[in-house]
Image 1 (cartoon, helix red, strand yellow):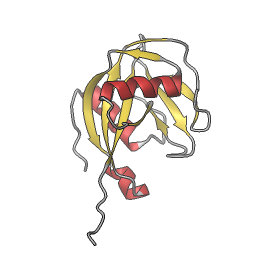
Image 2 (tube, rainbow, N blue to C red; image 1 turned 120 degrees about the vertical axis):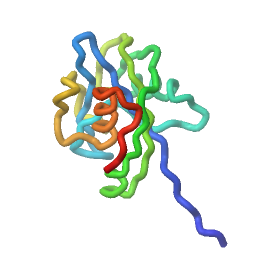
Image 3 (cartoon, rainbow, N blue to C red; image 1 turned 90 degrees about the vertical axis):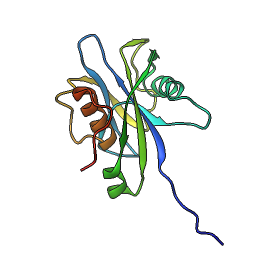
Image 4 (cartoon, rainbow, N blue to C red; image 1 turned 135 degrees about the vertical axis):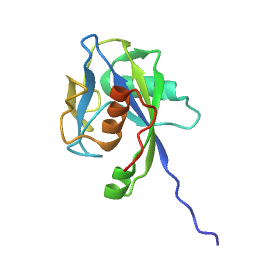
Length: 145
């Protein structure tokens, strides 16, 4: 019988930027407990990156995001080394949103904060930190070192 190979999973990260230039982050509970992170989750079968971002933003924050744009990809090896979970994350950028910010997944998140992207709260989740770094530097990919 052939050995079953494992492959990385696909994650979605969403940088939601408000009119003051701040990004939305939440403090995670359960999975990746105690880490701050931008909103996001898993890409579902048959979804576009944009559909996944819209769905995840609504599920987690209650916000209706419009025109999410892919701006970077990250290979999250730090999480793999620490937790044995390997994800490739596709990050999307959003400045157009509506609705009332709320914590819709209280079992997974302590709450949402608008923060300066140059001064993220710590400890910060690997994928989220790398995606914000890509946003700040204007790079599509940051090599893992």
